[in-house]
Image 1 (cartoon, rainbow, N blue to C red):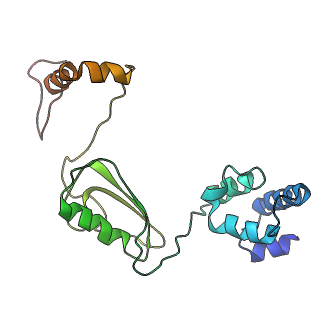
Image 2 (cartoon, rainbow, N blue to C red; image 1 turned 90 degrees about the vertical axis):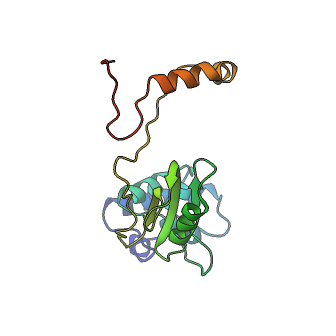
Length: 186
């Protein structure tokens, strides 16, 4: 395959074409692609994230992602973009907002954080990735709403065995709410 053909398949001009040519040569030599290199190359351009660990096309995929190529979601009517929900027990209205946002034709992927609740379009604590669009309502509007994560070098078994003690310590040593502060400096 020649560089001109690579460009027609969507490889951006410049050094990435050289990476593609190297990948094509190695893939052809391996004989691992009975459906054809052109087919695989086209898929790599469309979804570079699916090829980052591929033995032949991984370097090309990483170069495409580095050049701003992100996965293209093929919008299908009635099929929302995939989402990841971190937590449980959310308000039905917040989940409905997330589903509505995922149903937009520009939506690529979404996530809901553990502190999520109903917002003005997208749930507060919701994240929405779009292609070719900026959506002003897809921003949290809850002042001081945030999450913080602390990583403890303690085995999970210790938390399970002495959960009440950890809960008391968390409650005692964390200031909750807007303007909350400790009386004595910690």
